[in-house]
Length: 420
Image (cartoon, rainbow, N blue to C red; front, top):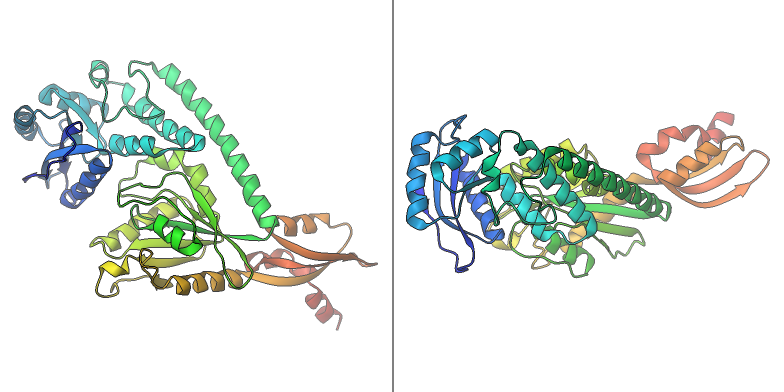
């Protein structure tokens, strides 16, 4: 099946042809079109085939020759495939098409490169780019030198494509070392927040579900948002006001997408851990999307890869764009419109209630020779007061219910019951 897209008005944009293969290719290609729009590429034609990908030419040699005719006719600058290609597939396709060939992953990496603002974000993007390039050096040879500028070469990871594997390995090692420093800083920051009694909430979900707009609605502070994929890349944290006197921090971070490159998941693990170790997750879902069920599954799958199993609220957003509540929904849930500020107070109340359920006030009497217990409470809870007597240190504080089993024997209520 061949379709012609609406032309982008930007005359400086690269003209590209999209190619997708597989049973779900038609749906996936719609998303690739949106990715190209975000990357400022002008999609001229889209080729979709419901067949098994060819091991050499991806779409088959006959279809590749047909696409070659379209390349000449519209003077396309590149052909973009909807799946990751092997170096041999890139080489074979470029021999037939005689034009630059890149895949979906390269487009996503380019978008990330253009969105990265912080030094940390740039490190993570470059690491993903270097790993992607390293995997494609073997067997690529002269076809890499034909790529030139444009899509697939943007951002802080841009290097001469003839660079050898040894140099890239060395650069990957340097970047991974820098990310370890980032991870240590984030762990220290999380520890300080917990010690100071802050509760953390993370906004997670499919890209363009409205997470940044929801952050603004919940916290009252401005956050950059735009109706494009991956509008937000660097994590942003703001305080959420509430009437219960709880210090709540809400963090927005990068969205997920189908066929998310594993290089990105690995590179952004330090940033994503900031959210996956939050006390509560808000899984934001675009209720107006016809693919909201599939998008929910994709985001849940990525969260599972990151071992994020804490409590969560499924927030069905953009309800101002739909007539009825979604029939297929997960629990617990809340239906909101971040843009119209509909049901935002209800969502705030749900957040506070769920955070309060996880924290329990405790009174302990800890023997003087068990300083490890006091350190444990400092790291995992909050100490509000402590007094010294002949039995030990009497402590009043708060700790998550999931941690109670480790200090149960020192709780004063339990001690009094056992004595009675």
